[in-house]
Image 1 (cartoon, rainbow, N blue to C red):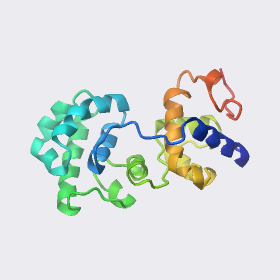
Image 2: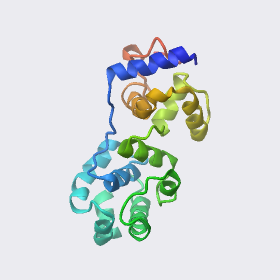
Image 3: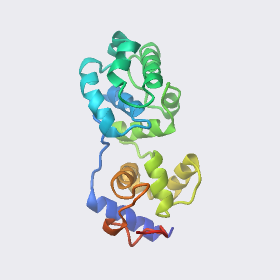
Image 4: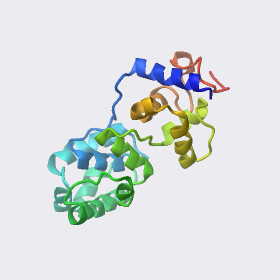
Length: 209
């Protein structure tokens, strides 16, 4: 895509939503990481419903361990993959206590070594918690960036690498959020709302409806 067009796309996003924020609710770095893990293949709305009560009683690694795996499952059983997520959260909490003095590490490689934390989750955490200009690629970012023509890639990792090359540095702090929100509310998978899209004249999608 023409760099001038890329610039106009992100300028449009910025004008529409100057300071976008993650839609997951959290109270500290630990609860943010837990919410991100819980959000895998689950909507943020669903995660917020279960964490509203969970984080009132367990907002630290030790409190999660005190709660125990079975009790944790009872709190998160309404979302997908809750058994695996509960196991990972218990293991992660133990590691944070034993190796990181109850704190969430802020190095990318340390983050992705934690149970249940992949590249996307690590980048979302670093961006949302610490304001680092990372670009996490989830299903929304992958779909939107390839559909509108920012990049033309067939995998998550290649999309991430290409986006980091084409997105100007000044937009990186919020680029992930803008693309996620655009994919969540406008450029939907089955029926994109092209007629009301703020970047419809810049988008290179050939099947605009």
